[in-house]
Length: 310
Image (cartoon, rainbow, N blue to C red; front, side, top):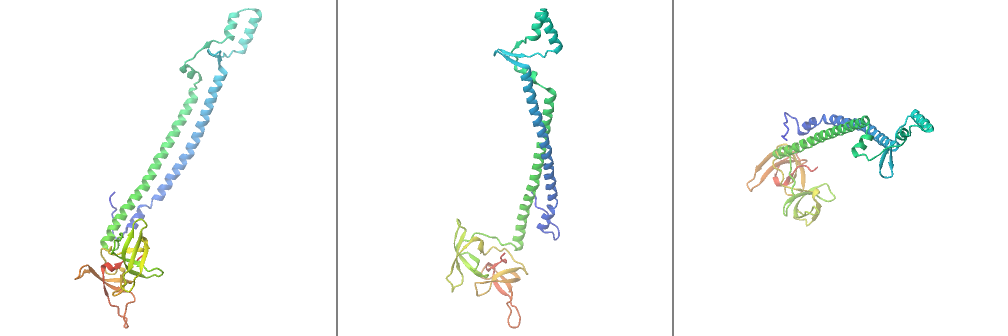
């Protein structure tokens, strides 16, 4: 997916919010459509079930009323004799006439029907056509629900992909501008900023070891007069050296010269290469003025600076 284009002062967040502004309405519409389809398909399914039960009952009734098994030899179709014919038949019996005709009306013929013949006998074309029409409607409703569900998934998936893309682009931008500090797993002797236990102060420390299993750091205080060792979780340790660049006016936390404590300050001059290697940044520390109220900028090594902790 191509990165989004941003114009003027538009931020990634503003562009993303604009991109998803219509999404709630789209999701609501799709959910309402699926709800309506649920109600319609439920009604159709209920009607289809009732018709199927009625069809089965009709077949059972036709079999019970019209077919009879004769001595395991086959089945007979029980004739439906008209009452008038039955009275005439009884009259003929009394008179002793037409015995063969009477036998034809009262004695069924034993037959062994094939499966096709049996199905034709119990089949009701009109009722079956209605059941199949309902089955087709139910299937169509289900397919429409699947299509709407897939469309809804695509909407959400597109948003997630857009967000991932914007985050990658934003990370690149922040790295270029120096507003992003990469976090990495510290190695032994790496410098780190930690919050002194029980205080709000941030101090400079050095990594002794890191346990990948527990994600815990073992660090030593960089103050030469201290022998303290700290055991802290990864979330409470900021490995230094991740800043790529800084601009004049950026607010940072930096180690005050000749101490191992971090103080809040503002970049007064962009980083420049130092004679001894590395980069030096001029920092104007807050509340760092002399008796005349004059604040002097201090030179701080880039590796002793971090962005304000959140």
